Amino acid sequence: MAEALSNKPRWAGLEYATLQQCMHCGLCLSVCPTFSETKRERHSPRGRVALARAIADGKTPMTKAFAEEIYFCLGCLACTSACPAGVDYATIFEHARAETEKSGLLNNPVRNVIRKTTVHWLFMDLRRLLFLGWFIRLYQRLGIQWLIRSSRVMKLMPKRLQELEAMTPTIPKKFSSRMIRTTTPPKEGRSARYRVAFLTGCAQDLIFSQINRDCVEVLSWNGCEVYSPKHQYCCGSLHAHNGETELARQLAIKQLEQFPPEKFDAIISNAGGCGSHMKHYHAFLKDDPVLGPRAKLWDSKVKDIHEWLEEIGFEPPAANPHASKIKVTYHESCHLAHGQKVTQQPRSILHSIPNLELIELPESDWCCGSAGIYNITQPVMANKLLDRKIANILKTGAEIVANGNSGCLLQLSNGMKERKLSIRVAHPITLLAEAYRQREKR
Image (cartoon, rainbow, N blue to C red; front, top):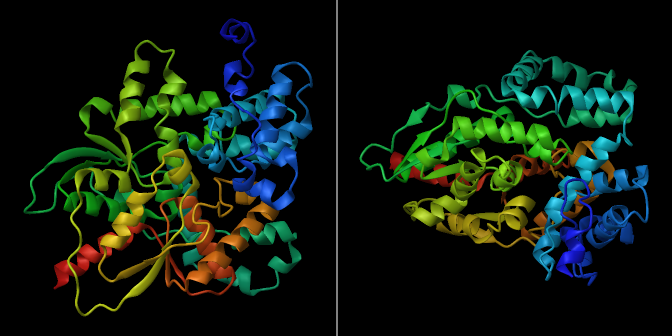
């Protein structure tokens, strides 16, 4: 059997045995958001694996229908948590998208320009992204955005353009480079127990730089010397999830050069999607005799911030007898829960904050529809998932919904704003940082 499999051709650079793992049991169906909404087999993990295997077997050619299907998948990885056979769906998903891009089946002038501008140019050097952010900030601070939104101009635009403009995030006054020192020592009075690298990210820096500041502050409070250079690179998850394997590989190399893994006790990410991708750099560099071993070490050093704080034994905030109880619920980032298997640690941190009452969220690990850029490319399905998520949040009666991924934070924030709900959306580490600061004030 093993010999027969070894004689099978590689498809999209993928070992055929990976496609053979699926037993067709169907346990993935009940946890797949797209199948749950459509009830169509092709929209399920089992269906997508079957289609990929049929192509690998030569039974069916690569078609535009398959290309569209693999981009209809959220890539949430809920199926991997449910699968008893341990199917490596993440690898199949990424390789299938890479093969889709090589085939050119989805090529059209508009799509090509957008991909070249964003994936190939904007996100390959974050200075370009932040420069764009500066212009958006100017657009917002000068009141131009308010003027356009309050006038009738937007009503003359196509509906999809109106929806995209409404999703424009508020750009903070300062990016991470102006809020975080290159090296932040442990908080005064605390000895340096660890030296860690901290990645500020793409969307996280552009939209949620204050979360980066909070994370560095919390790490410092817990005895970490934090190294975070001002100019950083994208981790490559956006590229890998959109079929650009070579670009993802190039960015992995840049990360290894900027953050030599042998120099740090841990490499910290505060975004579930980024961290999940960065824990698998070895898959991109395993054939390189020099970088392969370093990438393997890198993978072992990458830690989600919740995971790291729990591992080193973080200091719980002191109780404030004057603070009233606030109800908080926790929405799990798909890639944090299913990709990194980090589920209990964020809850542990939230439980440690004295004035927070954690209420479990129904379907807490069900995708909110963000899924990288899915809410832009597949708005109908993304909005259905967002509706479902917010309905569950409302059931809890929570005043705060906590989440550990920038895409989810933006998706939920926009959802609350659109529905005129006053529920705060916050990163768990921001809530922990606020509790530490309250202690200092007393």
